[in-house]
Amino acid sequence: MTPFGSAPGLRPTKLGVYLFLSVLAVFAAFPLFWMVSTSFKTYEEAYRFPPTLLPRHPSTGAYSSVFDTADLATFAMNSLLVALVATLAGTLFAAMAGYSLARSRFRGRRLLLRSTLLAYIFPQILLVIPLFEVLAKLDLVNTHLGLILAYVTLSFPFSTWMLTAYFRTVPIDIEEAAKVDGASNLRVFWQITLPLVAPGLVAVTVFAFINTWTEFLYSFIILGGGDGRTLSVFLYSLLGGESQQWELLMAASTVAMLPMIILFMAVQRRMASGLASGAVKG
Amino acid sequence: MSNRALVAEAPARRGGPGRAGDDGPPRLLRRVAGALDRKLTVLFLLPGMLCLALVILYPLGYNVWTSFTDKNLQFPGDKLIGFGNYVSILADSRFWNAALRSVSWTVASVLGQFAIGLLAALALERVTRGRTVLRVILIVPWTFSPIVMAFVWRYMLDGLGGVLNAVLLELHLIDKSVAFFGEAGTALPSATLVNIWFGYPFMMLALVAGIQAIPRELYEAAVVDGASYWRTVFSITLPALRPIVGTLIVLRTIWVFNNFDIIYLTTGGGPRDASTTLPVYAFNVGWNNFDVGRMAAVAVVMTIVLLAVTAVYMRLLRFEEERT
Image 1 (tube, rainbow over the protein chains, first blue to last red):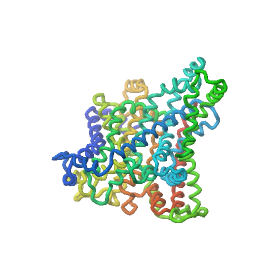
Image 2 (cartoon, one colour):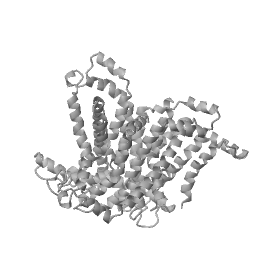
Image 3 (cartoon, chains in turn brown, yellow):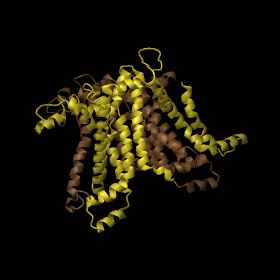
Image 4 (cartoon, rainbow over the protein chains, first blue to last red):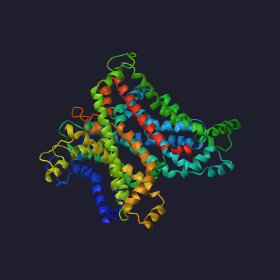
């Protein structure tokens, strides 16, 4: 039936499995290692060929010149503000919509759930110019509020989709019991059902935060240049012509990635189970 | 600032703490609160749907409308020109070349992500020591933003100081350095490699969760019957994963097909269009040539293709939802 089906000798050995995973781990993590390693090199060493694996004379020169020439802290704060507000609002809206879609029985409910997925289909590139015009009419171009509004919808469809699946796993009997005791629908949602889907909420929140923190196209179009820029757009402006100052780019990139790495270390266990099982049910 | 943004948030506030109030507000208020509470599930849909309408539905409608006009950002005013934009893009060989590249970019990326994600998930399931550490390392690519990803890979694949060239030269696999993102033959494959690197961790995580949900007894029974490891993979694991795989592949296909950042930031679509996929083509037409009408037409064509793909997928999977 399968090419391997009748050959028990091909059972993967422990050594083989570890070997495969090690090779993959190098492939996965080498760019991160290379980024950090290069960020501590000098301009000359970054262009040395063949390159050195670790900096010979580690220097923080690249970091100080990035911080000297640009107001990196401001851009980081912009990114953080936009990502946090958009993530919290988006997750709250998605939780409400997901609950509604999981619990209500009105006609067109299924259609609505599907159209949230359809929202995911429309190419960002399709939305970007009309969105720009909408925001221009509302006087929201070049404002963080405009970008936040766009970001809320960036992860809303996917979050709603996942949370709907999560809410379905909460037995309705629990809610009925609370209602018999006289609790309002809102109280049931807020105090009973919502805490029960906490793993899903964490996963969705982290996922949305990553999406917004790393997003490029919308912030490029909506914010343009200036002090209001997010980190992504600022980093883009560092990209020059043919000859790059790689050690500077790598130092700025390392700073931009730091929050992501910390966040991941903190929540990776919950991410792995929460996000995956939600996506799976969706 | 904007009133409309506030309107979008208002329903959320109405649905907010005001209604939990059992602590004795006037009777009328209570009745209103009670009535609102009974409509809770409908009210809950409003904020999200309003955002979607503003940021997606309106632009979509606008976009379809624009695709039938000769709107150009350089000149004021526009008029309806029927299917003119569609005719001109369908007659444009650059459009068709971009479409072909989009197909190969999407198929190669999704298959690569899936294959590596699946192998990694199966392998992770078989190790006991160091599983957590390995998993953390393996999801590292997912933490990268498109711009940082582009920087690092551009540096690693650079024709001058790139580490990949150093390694390949050392192994005598190439005679002279290759500017991977800068040469017509390697630009799109290199971007695809970056995309596979970035996208396999998500596949892996979802598949690990799926594998863990398969009842152990199935495997125990198979082992009693003398089935080999690969036999159990093909006759137990993969069939059990089918619904997940379907969802994953379709979501990824949509995402990759629509992806703009990775290609734009690594190769810029070049050299000379060698890596221009449909989103990059649309962007160049609209944002660089200001030909918004034509750009809209490209976008509409892309959406129709994706809708067709998704419709087929929904048919195939017959939606788990329907059973509830």
